[in-house]
Length: 122
Image (cartoon, rainbow, N blue to C red; front, side):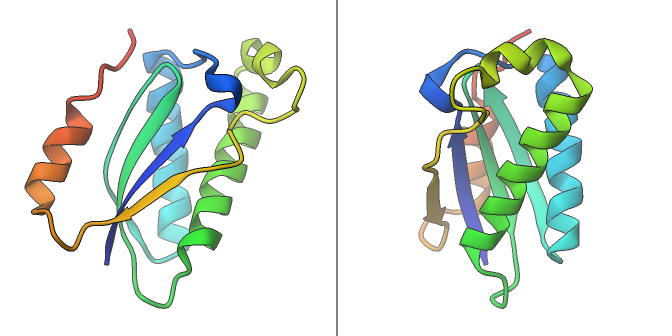
């Protein structure tokens, strides 16, 4: 099964640079592997990330999302102390909500192109 996931930062703060997104991709790829899933495509902007994930039916999307958001938030906070200010009030990097859309109707190539076209910060 394929899902398009979108996570936005708390209060839509413009947090990420290319360096942050590159490390986040590595972290999220490892989390997906722990769930016997594959991160097919990843990209993001200063205040959001888009993922295309291929996962087995036995994996609950909500558990995968909670792990992706929790692990990435914790690791980025440890590895990039300059992000601490973005955790300020809520003590969270991510908004509590997320978008998850099934990819049954759209060809994977179309969704990959959409994710690749995100305006990644430098």
